[in-house]
Image 1 (spheres, rainbow, N blue to C red):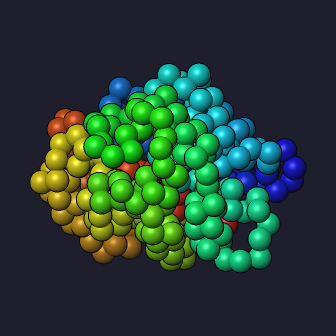
Image 2: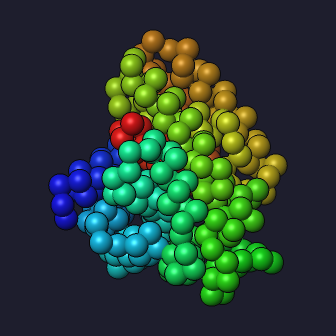
Image 3: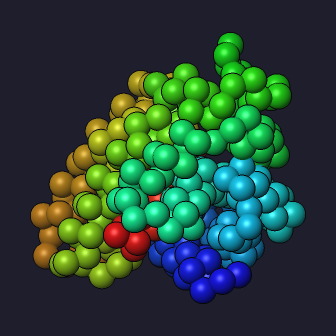
Length: 276
């Protein structure tokens, strides 16, 4: 790795580890495991994928596939597919060393991706085999890629928040990064990441919940997140929210609800925020 790649790998690793320090109800975090996975699974995933995702010589698609592949060999479960899908284009954009703004460069990377990038991406998704994946009448990832990534992601954007980032220029990621940086002015990094997660979950129905439990459940969780965020932001000492957040965490896990997409977006927003 060159020095830029090493810096990106370190920033990616730090974003992954910070997200685990945040109390994120319904997800795996330093306060509680969940959904058959442990904090150590995610730490190990962050460590091994950071060694691959910022390698300078990789194509966009290779960056996604090889980061997922090395993760699967290390932990044998899907801990970071969404994180890799969101962070790989950011890294690819920075490695271009283009003077344009980062968000514009990410859009350019996605638009310039070819059929091999799409197939590598589809292969990574098949390898990770995320829960609730289902089948799509068009551009199903279980088949060989027949269209480029931009076209496939545009078709999926209404049902998947990660696909929407590819389709709309990472608008939600960068908006969330701005919120996170604002929180950092008054909170420590871990509590800022907790607020970021609650903000994401309160703004958009979590597409992982939608896939597994349906839109009504996702909207119910979104409303609960808005209440938790309002309570959190009303406190001078965020630690006073810990009891309520842990109670909600227990409730979500008892209902087998996993807001995994919101956790992925949390990492991506922290990562993007650290690069702005």
